[in-house]
Length: 335
Image (tube, helix red, strand yellow):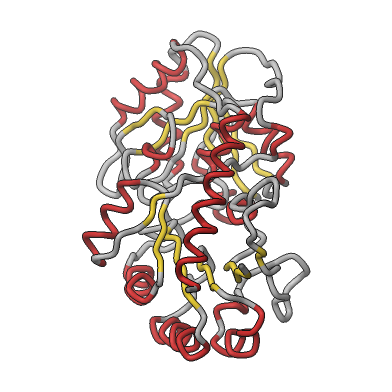
């Protein structure tokens, strides 16, 4: 089964494959993006109707995950038409019911309104997201859990030792759904009350990241380029608790990486983060930040035992099951 994944190089998509290569699925590599450096997959050429028509003999299924942020409903309708004209199937995994990069949900809602009804099969990551898809679009989505994020050789690797209890908040480049400054200020108050605890805030070295540092004088704010994968795993392993400062969104690969590495997660109660795996929850959405629930969750993390860490054997079995479900979906829609 030949699958054109949009994208192919994302860690989530790479880990859909059976680790023993027994699923019979071949995923095409991301095509080069004109004018972009090697290795960058966006904007994805596979979403162009001309690419579909020119390469229809090379794939059986187009599986869309990410990368359609800049596509209009007309663009996506033309893509669907090209797939129908060439007899190729469309599978859509709904990772985001609300795009974390868009302050206004209208554009993403319009894109989903084209892709989800047109898809030959729809998948998502949690039962709550599947229920929302059913209500909005009348489509039954197959629920497939998020696979591991960190490399298999790091699953179960010993965690590095460090002093105290480290609470981390990473603002990254402050996506539209992130509200790190008030969350950091609320965290500072409770962390100061806990023996041996300290708060570390990280941000990318761009204008928005530097604005976070400027808004938090006196805080331990570390401004730096985006982490490489190895740097990210080391950073997350050095935290006892990672706090997600999101006010909207749906699912999180960051949460999965923390679970892989044995770092506790404090997630907002918006979206479906809490359905993905074990985590603490606090109240946070576009209307309010519930400081009391945040403080209570941090205290519980500090007082409680270390979180349940992903078991390498179970993660491998999970990934094998994920690969099997995808192979079955592809075979079904290709028929």
